[in-house]
Image (cartoon, rainbow, N blue to C red; front, side, top):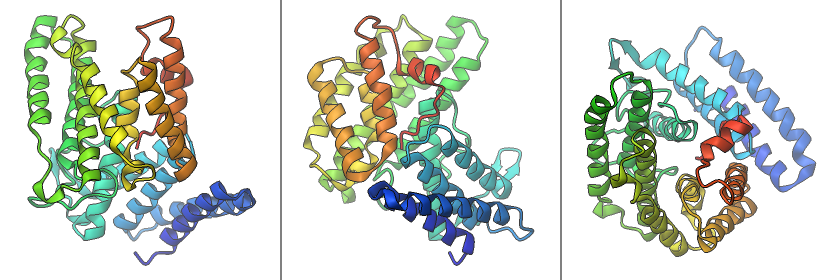
Length: 336
């Protein structure tokens, strides 16, 4: 990617990391971030389209704001990336053409966008910005991804759960018809999540543990959606505690400063919203704090602050949810 705008964006990313390690770089980091934003503005207003560069700049800006602990602007850049994709891929009439991103770099950008978009939908309790199926999947088998490991299919099923959630919230059908229509979709998603298997070629211990944690978190996400729409359904409600416990058990197997730590926020946060035992709470708290200290990923700190408030509130109100905390704070939480 030979682009002045992308170079400015990478300089902003690098200087921000430096500023997190050494306060004397903060002024430089702010200057670089301002320059990167100006370059991005110039790029997207140019008559000559460079969708891969535009997309890359938006996603780096999104990640930069996210790891800095921002709770608003990261989503603005994610929405910008969505607009870039839609402008070159949406053929109308539900037709979708990803050929502008068919290069190796372009495929990685699609996976990166999908990951950020789907995780944003979980945290915001909405459908993803871009719903076009498994659009980031190229071929029968994908290599392990730097963001979500080997969980590409799991990512798709999480997305489908958020779509189901949005469809149910928007539906004005009678409750019995809703249950008949959407209950079947929920059961099918659960069956797919349970039957999913990690590819035999990707059996490294860290990737397997990460994938299993994502599977359990995806099932919890599904069960949260179902129990809110059908509060009388005990079939789903009784499963969340054991799924959360499975995440805790896998977490205790992951070594300190393991490579997969940077992708743990989704399962840690979803699990944290379900647990109540002090030992389990401390396991989640300790891991999230250690990642903030060792990797300077301050979106983990934001997520932990939400969980800490949730755990405190639940001492007197068992029915409170982390969505209530986010609504009160008016945060857009990044759980990537």
